Amino acid sequence: MTETRDYYNEAETVALDGLTPQQSVEAKPLIQQIVDDWLRQADEEETLERADLVEIGLEDLRNALTRKVGDARLATLHAQALKPTVQKTSGQAFALAKQVADRDIDKQSAAPQARQLQESIHKLIQQVNQLKDEDNKRLFLRDLADGDLETRYVLEDEEGAISIRLNRHING
Figure 1: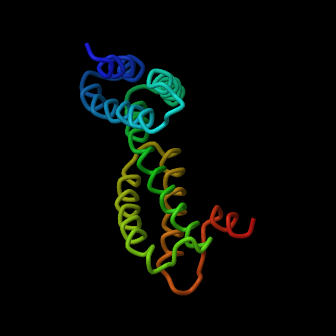
Figure 2 (figure 1 turned 180 degrees about the horizontal axis):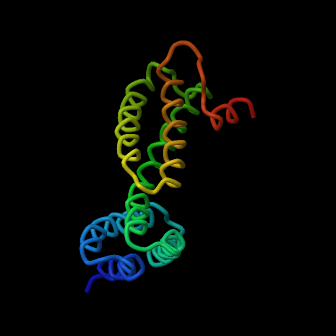
């Protein structure tokens, strides 16, 4: 059995408890997506070993799923699978807006990437709105709203509303 398969099995042991057989079928691709993201992060992060990052991920997953069974557990798995994409996209929008604010890149040069991020954010908002996990839905929508404001900061000629985090960056 491969190392990756072992990680999937460990995550399934954590995640599938409390699910019906039908829910387990729906959960398995989500679990695979979650584990794949841990492994991607481990490959990007040179200071942590894969096994260590997976262990951290498993602990986070256990905590997220504590006292949740059935539909609530499945809803949390859906949210956990979407979380890295939301965080990455929102983070990219913030990083781009910071570059523009710091005058490392001009708005015109940053505009194509900002438009692409804005399109991704709008698609993610649709996916997040379908989540049944209301707590994560609220958090994700806040992150995406910040990212949307940051892409607007890059794309709009006139300075309008900006995210709190970009405001903090600009104004110290």
